[in-house]
Picture: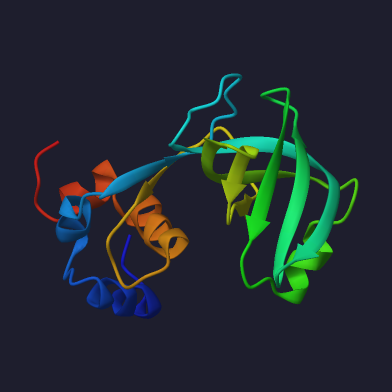
Length: 155
């Protein structure tokens, strides 16, 4: 498979000249979006939640949630909320959030969570100028046994 002109530009942005160099560009971390039934305190994890209520507090958005996979209540704080945050965190909305769960004196919290669309994946995270999804797409598309063999590697 030949590399498209657009993808050649992406490869240049991450400092790779060919598919072998892309294959050797190893992840710096991994994002695990598995829904666990026990909290992973102090670590990033995915949680399935329903919004119970939300309110503005000192210019920030405070959201009260019920986590279905952990069967617990928690609070989330969104700093400098944008209009889409208010639309996303409406009472009754269900979604999967990704962030760090912490126990505090005020209860369980997840500060500045990220809403994600897919669960049950372990996604590589790269240190690069590209967005994570663009970098992952390049690897999925071009780092194959057939393409590496075309570059001169033995099977």
